[in-house]
Image (cartoon, rainbow, N blue to C red):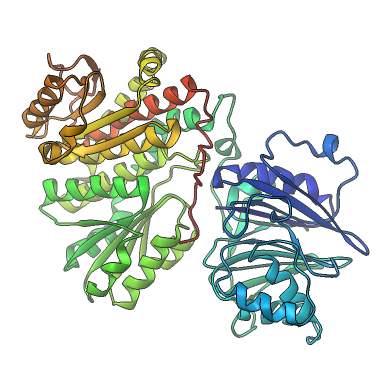
Length: 591
């Protein structure tokens, strides 16, 4: 949520910052702004709306500078207006600040600053930071000391970019919100996420909690906010191809990323037994195991919990990270928390990690981003290797998470090789489902589905997670009410929703409960539903049938792709942008 980009170097930073902001559009925003430091002032531009159609040379031909910050804003404090968009400034307009996070004590700080004569022009919590820094500069000898004092006085979360008029210096800092330093050749970048500057450098430093970076004179120094002392940091090379963060000729990132799923499965299952071994040992030693995640990642965790129960007789309790604080006090030494996240920056997941460590529990992370906050905080991590996922809706990351759970379960059984062979067959089925003829068939179905008000999905056992995930995808991108249910829950309320012609997706695998789910399909069909079967075999109850080859408990990894395609083509039928659904952000970095 929100995106920050910064540049300092010998070139013109404005084009790089504008490009970076466009690459962070997936994080969600409603307005944006940019500022550059000049010899005696800070020049800026702000506007409400999207940045996608903005061209710097055309729209701001004289705008540029070697020190620049930019921001895409998701409104939290204050409405969607130019005044509330970032950057925000000090009274003398000599300090500009961009911020992602929430200043929890901004009201107290604002009152205190107003009593000292500071005039505020926005309703935001962020503007407090600029004025507080201006006030602290009156009493500190250096800008670094003033910034550190300001950071210590802020309660809440922040990722910050700060510039000063006429000063060749750029500050960045983080607490609770992600911020990455990009290290180029005599030029440096700040970004909320790596794709912001991947075009220019793949050498990065992931700032830790309570760290500040000062960049000037062609060098950078990272300091601990509390002590003010220099901190040791590690430069990491991100093994992502820039093409992975581009559309590559496709109309949307969503379809591009879905088409990448066969390759993603191959990359994910390239993990060795040696890499899996520490995770297996953590599971074997654990007294209790919890799977903690949000949204799509939680659905992958639910799939994993069923897989481990059915294949290994291991109990895992999936819990939404947002609800985990209510259970955190029950954790004990010897317990294991398995966290799942695409970004590795989800605020609620990171809070769960803190809670786990506080209780003496171990943390295993399934994460997509190398060097992310989650990866650094976990006791051990498994990289899912999905590559950058730009579309707000998660598709390839979900499949990679499912595949990693399959590899981990196979490793616990001592059958890594057999699991890899089966997943390669799953990969081939994913390729078939993504074929042009298959996509055309789904697109044809979507024409009718786009006109309905409700869509439901049913699954039992290993397919329960796919019922949930299918409807999440559909509702996220099409704004159609969609709900997934367990087949066993149908009679306990959901069947009251079934009416004539309502579409019901039914997931069936050769898993021992296929007869029960077909029985559920008959129940909804008897009440007028149109049943769409996604199954390893056809059945007369299915009015439409989508084949999913039988791979036992791994079948859902392929069958979910049908639902992803449905969601995509329904969005196109409704003339909606599947990459950036309304009100949604890719990475939820505030609680």
